[in-house]
Length: 228
Image (cartoon, rainbow, N blue to C red; front, side, top):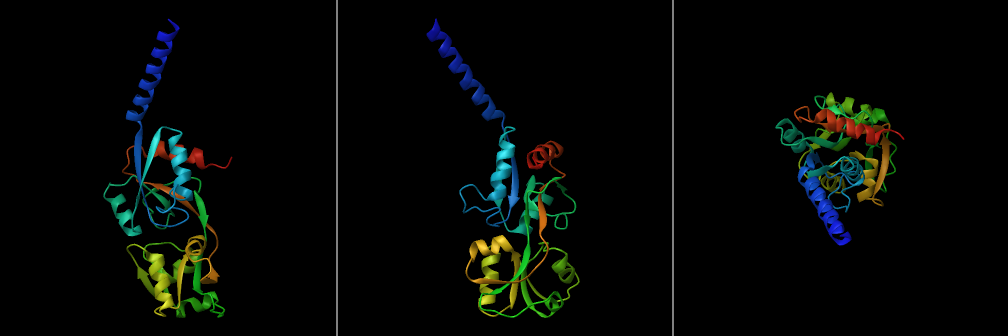
């Protein structure tokens, strides 16, 4: 009798597990290659990917991440093919709902060659040849100049943007490039010098208003991201 009961319990547990797997929902978020925050080369997908996946998993929701060029990811949100973005600020996607609490913080900096000893002030930025990623928000210090075209900016889209900006600088096609401090130093820890930085800013998880379970996902993420 005990053996029969044990067998029935085992079968019941397996049935519950199978039911959970079948019923588990999947949300699909877009993300750009922005190591160490979101990064297909890292086993856990990056700091933010791992954090969000863990929060959703606790609620029986799977996270699928599509790594795409930034503007392509935003376009797929508009087309209703993605449920959200892994990293975003309001200026980049004003029509999307952002979490109440940040996923992480970032700081945009102007990077030059390691041996470049030139001292750069904010008043000098508009006279420099600078590469940047089209569609990104770099904080008020840089965004005001970019939006008003008060400078010599080369805007890049597509993939491998950091690598391409670094190469452009090495070839003297631009003087400097803009990138998040942690991201740039993750890839080029010994080759770069920081010239000037914007203030540290938070970034958030963004959910498409077209996603039917938008509020439910926001509530789950807000609870998981809230300061303990």
